[in-house]
Amino acid sequence: MYVGEFKDNVKCGKGKMRLSNGKVYEGDMKNNEFNGYGKYIFDSGAFYEGEFKDGYRSGFGKYYYANGAFYEGEWKDDRKNGHGKEVSARGDVKVGIWINDNFVREDDITTDDSSDGVLNKIKSMFRKK
Image (cartoon, rainbow, N blue to C red; front, top):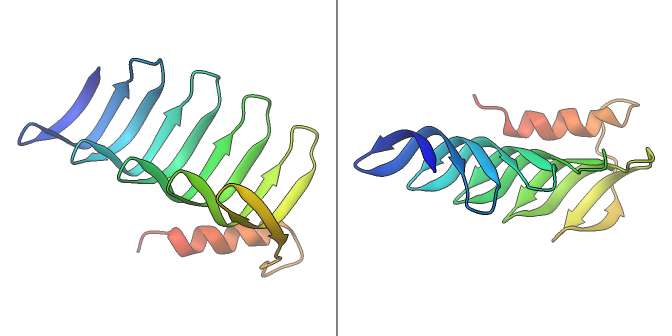
């Protein structure tokens, strides 16, 4: 079920969609796809908040696992791709490069002495002008 804006009978603009599998999307739509900024809630309780392109997580976003862990960083085609930071439920931290959801290497691109510097740099790349 979709509640939101349409243009020429196509989902376009802000909207909220409850999918038949129990998942929920709320955010920007374009050409019947998730496009722009939105929040996608999984039936497990996990959720993603960030950028979408053509129905996929793409750009900058944060994924919260149901167990309290999270990943914040770059996404492409629904997978962690690029720079990011992952914090496990126990508090273990990985900062570096992901390719197709796999952590491949540490890469400190911080502009200051904290691990949050990487996130500030990533966020600045995606800020709208």
